[in-house]
Amino acid sequence: MEIQVLKIEGGRLRLKIIGETFTFGNLLQKALLEDDRILGAGFHRPHPLKKEIVFDIYFKDDVKPEEYRSIIIENVERMYSYISELKSEVLNALEKAGENK
Image 1 (tube, one colour):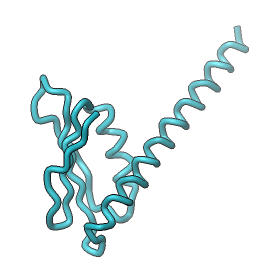
Image 2 (cartoon, helix red, strand yellow):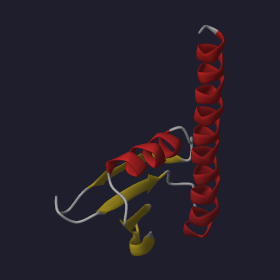
Image 3 (cartoon, helix red, strand yellow):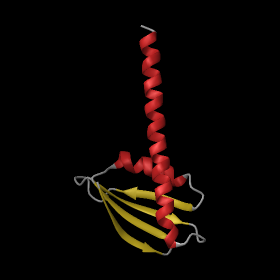
Image 4 (cartoon, helix red, strand yellow):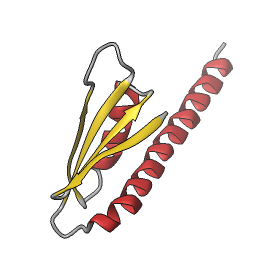
């Protein structure tokens, strides 16, 4: 994975995430949209044959550009938490399924 900052202006941060597609984008978008400091977040895949997404994050007016980094990091950690929770739930379900056989 490679991340490039394409634009920072007017409360918007645009990132290109190379090596990822919709699955990763949906997880990150879910985390970002739960943050009260973010007005909106979305992504698109510029070309169907390229494994990359372009992500736009819109921050509220009172958020300063120097805060963008910490906000993104917090939300990546939230994304990690979702994945950890999923892992735990899958393991529990598999253990229960094994007990029923």
